[in-house]
Image (cartoon, rainbow, N blue to C red):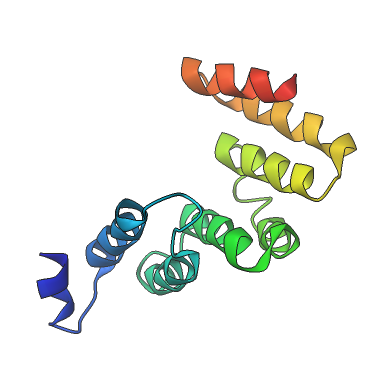
Length: 130
């Protein structure tokens, strides 16, 4: 159905989201995921939904294409809008860790922990904290 919808050459937000999911589903492994395509799709999705969460997801894809520093720079622009969103802080912690900025990781993980009540997410964050 996604392929047939693409023939119309009028992608909408749901088609773009489905295409992102398809990129993940069709990849034979995490490492083989077509992150460049996902990055382009998130860029297109921003036309329809210019939300901070879509921008966060785009930054995650950017990390896989251009590296942690580029993604962290994208996150800086989201700090105010997503200050109360746990996934912003956990993503930031991961990027800081990849950049070797361990002294900043704990604060980001602790803030993410404060912001979620989900038991599975809390357990994962506690594990990452140490």
